[in-house]
Length: 102
Image 1 (cartoon, helix red, strand yellow):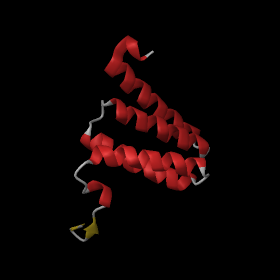
Image 2 (cartoon, one colour):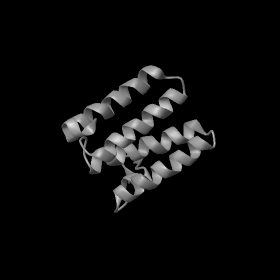
Image 3 (cartoon, helix red, strand yellow):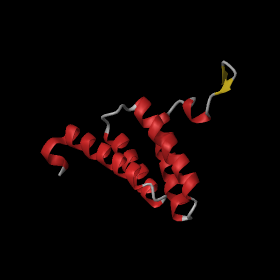
Image 4 (tube, one colour):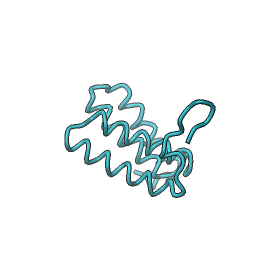
């Protein structure tokens, strides 16, 4: 699918983005276990984008994506970015669940 000379990534055109996000996360988990950190990062970034777009910035699944991205960034020794993602997830869970998130 093309738009203004750019090709739209396949994952933005599916009818059930939540299921695709779960699948991309699962693939990313396997890629990480296989040691393919860059591929895992890409899969989790795509899953996170889908969740942010279709579930919103305050959905627990979006928070789970932030946690996964934090783990991968830490694995890549980008600890500053890892902390940012984890703090973003914590803030989301605290906002969503309040004291029950602890």
